[in-house]
Structures are given as structure tokens and as C-alpha cells.
Image 1 (cartoon, rainbow, N blue to C red):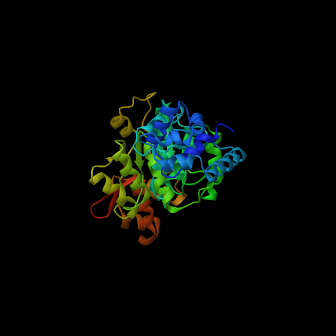
Image 2 (image 1 turned 90 degrees about the vertical axis):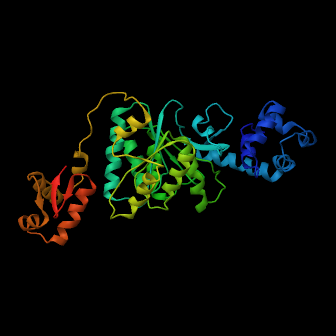
Image 3 (image 1 turned 45 degrees about the vertical axis):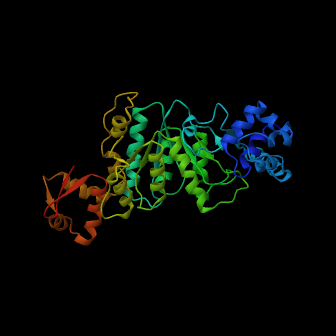
Length: 368
């Protein structure tokens, strides 16, 4: 029998624990020897349930593991067991670490600084552009940085895209087997992640169906792999808040980006800051300060130009008008630009979200 199958068998035994596996390995010497030992002998081991021994020798479990190994080979999936030297060390520090990780591409390096960037699937322009600036700042400041996220729509997707663009290894943690990508529209992004030196990772075998609770379960892996977790935008009950709370319970540093009171996607971040679960973050400098990570090189703070480049021509015209004045009222702008206030207001709100302008009393605006 292919010796690769034994850790897979152990990982799918119902309710098996790391403590039981540790006891079995201690007694038998190594993992393959567990399966050559007689059941009657293993039944007598303290700390190992009889049901665990029976499931280990079950034909159904063995057959399922054999089929999984075939599918892994077909789809180019590898695995790492928690007893392997290459298993991510940071995950071993959490009390509910997975027994096995399936992956395509690479695993996070033990020596790297790991930052998770997470948030809502319905990201605003403000959140998306902040991620652009933040990831670019990390790429300029550090040689040994890695980005983790969940390969979902919105903030996760943008974090991975920017990491690939700025040549930072990035890792997508999935809530299903690696024979597929959900959402399917992110399949090309997953391929780019792998090609650029990162990887996609899951604790779920290919035969495990996609269920909503899988994504809650995988959140602990995002939290556990990280030195720091950055929540960019999230509702109060968003999945990112669940991940942040888990990270806090694991003694990881948590950061949250404040936003506008007009958007419910900032409410979760504000709550994390109020509850002192998260430190307020507005730039990569906060990572350096709180984490005490000396930069690999000194870089100037990235200006707002990365935001300005995303504006359409009219929004740039509005911004230029504000920049040319000490301050200017919305009524004066409407008159000079010959545009109704109702159409001007959303543009001003966008510029405010990007931290390019600020609002003054009396509906006046000035550049930052």
C-alpha cells in the first residue's frame, strides 16, 4: 500500500484527535506501524478510543482514502500532515489546528511575516483602493512578507490580485476541496497565485461537499497562519469579524480600517476598534509600529496618487478644483462646474472615502 495513504486515513477518522495520534505514534514508533499493529493491542492503549482503532482499520475509510489519493494525483494536490516538519508552525500554536492541509503550489514559509487581509465580499471603492495602497506599501518595505486571504469576492480577491501584481507570495485558504474553485470566476486568479510562488490551501478533501459551515471553519486557518490580521471592511456580523475574533483569541494582532458612518461595511471595523479587539490602521506604518517589524528598506510614504489614478476625468476635475482652493463650498463647485448638487455629492463622497478631501462645517471642502 502507498505509504502516503496513512495520514489521509487518520485525517478522515471521525472525531480523532491529535492527542490520540500522538499516543499511537509514541507507542508504535511511526505512522505506518500503527496500521500493522493488532487491534487488540491498540485497544489497551490509554487515551485512544476503541472507536478510533476500529475506524482506522475500516474498509470503508481505507477505500475512501485510496480514492482521495487517486484524485489528489489527478488534480495535482499535495498534502502536509501536522507531524511533518513542513507543516506551518504558526498553525501548530492554535488549540484547534487541523490535522492535515491539502495544497497546490507552495506553503507559507516559516521565516516570513504573514499578514491576512480580509473583509466584505461587497467592497466599496474606498476599501479596494486602500488595499491597493496597503499591499504596495508592504511590497516596498519588506522582502519577507506574505499575504493570506480567503479567495472570496471583494476584499479577499483584491488582496490576492495586488499581492500577485506586487510580487508578494499570497495564499488562498478555501472552504472546500482543491479539485474546484469557488467562486468559479476566481479560478484564473488561483492559477496566478500558484504561478507567482504562492498557493491555495484547504483542510477539506475532495470528497467533502461545499457547505456554508466550511467557510466558518476555515476562518481559524486564516487566523492561525497569520502574525497580523487586517480587517478592511465588514458588517458587524460578517465572516471577517468572526476571523478577527478568532485571531484575537489566538493572541494574534488584529487591525481594522475605519471608514464612513454612511456605510454598514465599516460598522464591523468600528466595533472591533471600540471593543479593543483591533488596533486602528490607516497605513502600513501601523504594521511596522505595532508588530515591531523593522523595514527591509526605508521608503517614502506612498502618496494618494494611487487613488487619484483610479478616478474618472470628471472626478479628477472636481478634485483639482478643491486642491486649487484653501476651501470651497459645494454650492460654489456646483455653480462653477454647472452640475446639480445631487450629482456632485456622490463624487465628493467618493473623494472623501479615498481620504483625498475632508469635509468642513458649512458644507465646505478642502484637500488633504
